[in-house]
Image (tube, rainbow, N blue to C red; front, top):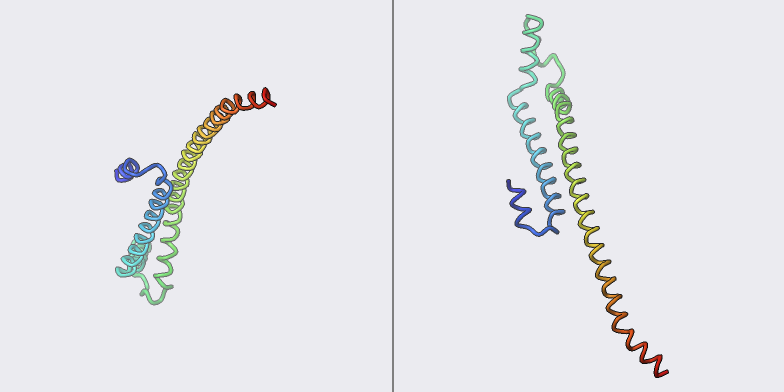
Length: 143
């Protein structure tokens, strides 16, 4: 798995941009596949062929010529959009879940670092008091 290898090889701070790059690559891949599929269907006149086969099968007759009907490219785009919409939504939902998981990991890391910083500040305050206490006593005794 390339993602796992990258996560192991890169520092934890790179996870945010790595996730963004992964989402961008998936979106570009989906768009390229969509364009290629539309082009292939247009080149092979898939809508026309499907319509003619449906009409021949269900009506048992000879379908009218393609020029007598609406534009096949528009119908193809509409049908493809109907089928592509749920796939895009599923992909976006998946990416949303991934992003939410990444956000939760980042929140946990932030909380851990905040606790560590607060502990260090507390230790710094105690060490500062310990260093200043003898000086304050000396100034009170001498003053």
